[in-house]
Length: 170
Image 1 (cartoon, one colour):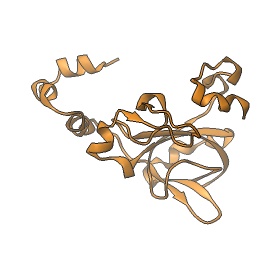
Image 2 (cartoon, one colour):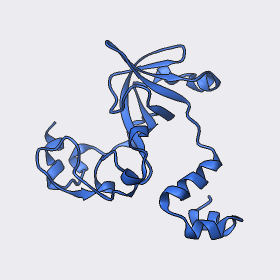
Image 3 (cartoon, rainbow, N blue to C red):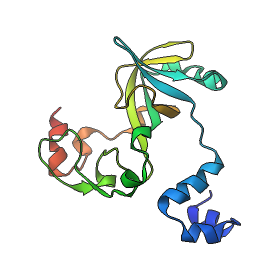
């Protein structure tokens, strides 16, 4: 496994890594190759993930799953201000509580990556029809992963801050 320290230690650009901002660091790291594999599509009556042609073979047997994770780029919030924001008010909460961005699902993040578990309604060719996603039409999709039962903790076992306790009742 390559850790970030090992990556920097063994990288000829290590002096540049030491002097760059987090945003510049990501630009340098992008040269390692994260590719957009598709896009979120939202139409009047449907929501789907359109997978681009070079990646459609990777969908084989995905229709055997009821739920999948969609990893997506929060492209509308990819700017230096949002990347440097470390405190945010969690979206969709009645109470106003400012938390660290790693303690909520704020779209303002150092690396604007979104992750949503969705119900897979049907698969047609290169389209994964889903029940919903907290992204907008045209959002870049980075990956699709099957949801497996062992991937989550039962709600009764979760420890949550008081401003998220209402989730245990839903």
